[in-house]
Each structure stands twice: as structure tokens, then as C-alpha cells.
Image 1 (cartoon, chains in turn brown, yellow):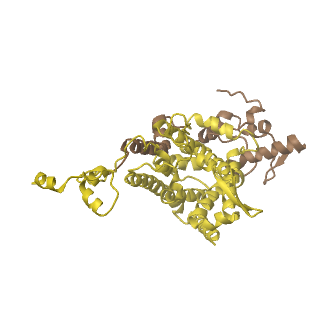
Image 2 (spheres, chains in turn purple, red):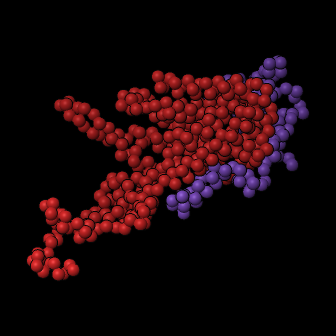
Length: 129
Length: 345
């Protein structure tokens, strides 16, 4: 025999509702962002670091560039492991190959629901649609 | 010894996940099968535990009275600490659940020069457990970003607020610092204070180390040993939509993290962590102190046994009581023996 059914059953329903939130929220919202396919560079054959490193740690790399160049007057010149030279710059380096923010940056950032604050300082490129 | 044992158990769990994820099929076991089983155990165990408590009758009012009870009109009642109405109980429960009021009342006892026993207020436990629980809540809510696609809008504000200081990239979350700080305090409290260490068991240290392990692996993944968030989100959203896939590289530290979380989920309903549900079912908190206003009848009383008042009892046994020299409230009617005989016939 259950005592205080009137309070305990609704309480448990609320508990299960909260625990299963991601399950029913995904069903209700319906409009899932597709798995990201960032646009590959047509110009360069290799990025500044291996692809997997760039996938996981590009933000840390950009952060060290910023600290190095803006705060301690470091060099703009960088060289990949294979000896290719590149410019250590978001707009003049990265975006030379990955020109479209929408087709490159935003695909993964929207999917992972992250909002980097790059464009707080940098001027966001105008997209040619 | 109990500390070491708990630490070793958690380290063994870490090792199991580290090695287990490497074997063929291990990523499916640790990334998909075990999390589902753990969630299932958590929900079923939690509901079962609550239903088990709900089956226990609470016939009488046993609230802890931490203030003046409802009394004469000119005596001021402490409505939150000794509530006599449902509204008062709701107020007491809300404050207990959201601000841990009973921990706020924590005291310490010390022997001072004299020697005298002195009691003092001790708010550290309250402060750090409040910090721990709220940081954990924020962290838990933040993780919804990995399980929902698209993320619910209210989480954007939470994420922004938590990373308000914009330190580094990815931005540092304040909740991570608060979480580790508070957990470390709660652990050190058990180790340093001799009285608390004396009563601490493996099932006190184990959840602390387990949660600390979850926190550390999470922090490592975010700030130090980076993992592929997009691949992970494809797995976690897949888990939430019952179509999990493991694509590309994920990083073995992720499997350690998710395995420790799975262990926590499965362990939760069968441990002291169940206070999350238990707080709502604590008769010492959720009952109104109205014993003087309402008659509470024990539900398992035998209906065949009728109430027997003292007056009725004395009526039944008055003669014997007088004979035995026991005091009675109503004396035997003084009747002459001659008149008594015909009256009885």
C-alpha cells in the first residue's frame, strides 16, 4: 500500500520528466542540426597542424597565437612540420583557405552549440551567398 | 585505510575504462551499453527506492521542532522551524531544498581552557556544500548542450554567465573551479577533523572520489587533453535519440569520464546520495507539527479494539481498585449493605 499517492506519484512523474529531458526535448524540437561537414580548403594541401589536432585544439592554438602576437609582440610567421610557411592570423591566415565563416566555422560551432568570442574584436567577414 | 580503499576503487574504475575502451568493441560497451544500463538502473532504482519509502506508514507527527511551536496567541510561533500548517511546511521544505537550512544550523563543540565545553556556529559545511551542489547543478545543465540538438535557448545564457570571465579558449567556467574547490573542502573536512574522520566510511569517501574523478576527467578534457567534441556530440545526441553511433576518434579519457558517470548513476539509488530523493520524504521535515490540533489515528489499528477511556476503565475496575487501595477519581457510592442486596437482585 502506498501512502501519500497524491504527492508521490506526481513527484516521480516530474523526476522522470527531468531525467528524460534530452530524450523528449529532441523529439519535440524536431529540427535537429545536421552533423557538420565543414568545407575543406581548395587552396592548401595541409593545415598548420594535423587535422585531428585542428579538430580538437584549434581554439587553444588560436589563443596562443593571440597571446604571443598581441601581448608579447611575437612573430606572425609560422611554419608547418613539412616546411610550408603560413601567416599566424585568423583573418589573413586561417580564413585565406577557409574563407567562409558560415561554411566552415559555423558548421561545427552551431552543431556543438559553442559561441566563440572571436568576432567580439575581429570584424566578421561579409559572406557572399 | 578507508580513504585509501575508496581511492583505489576509483582508480581501478579509471583503469578498467582506460583499458576496456581499447579492446575491440570496448568503445561500444563503454560508450553505449554501459551508459544505457546505468541510466536504466538509476531511474528504476530511484523510483523503486521512493516507492519503498512511500510504502512505510508514518502514522504520527515526528517533525524536528527547531523553534517555538504554535501555542497561545501571545507566544510568537516560529512558522518556518516549527510549522503547524501546510504552507509553513512548504516554506520549510523549499528553504531546506534550495538553501540547506539544516546545515546552516551546524555547530561545533570544543573544549576550551577551563576546561569548558563550548559550542559555536560552524558555517563552512553549509557554505561548501551549497557551493558544491549548485556548481554541480550548473555543470549538469551545461552538459545538456551535448545531449540536445539544437540546444534549448535558456542554456545559452547559462553558458555565457558561467564563462563570463572569458579566460582562455575554450573559456574557463567558474563552476568548474567552485566545484573542485568545494569537493576538496568536503573531502579534507572528513580527513582533517578527527571526529568526522572517525565516523567516515568507505561509502562516504567513495562518492567523493568518484565525483572528483568525474570532475577531473571533465576538466582535463576541456582544458588540457582535448577531445573531439563533434564526434562526442554525435555519440551523446545519438544516445538521447536512441540511435548512438561512434564515429572517428573520441579519445580514451572520454570513456573514463562516461564510465565514472555511469558508475555514479548506477550507484546513486543504493547509496547515501539518494538523499536527493529522500529529502522530500523525510517525515522529520515534511510534516506539520499539528499534533495538538488534529488527532492522528494509527492506520493499522485493529478496528475491533474500541477506544477505552480512563473513565470507562475506572468504571470497570473501580471496586478492585478500591480493594487494592489504588486512588480513584470517583469513589464507590457509599451504600448500606442492606439496601444493596435487593437492588442487585
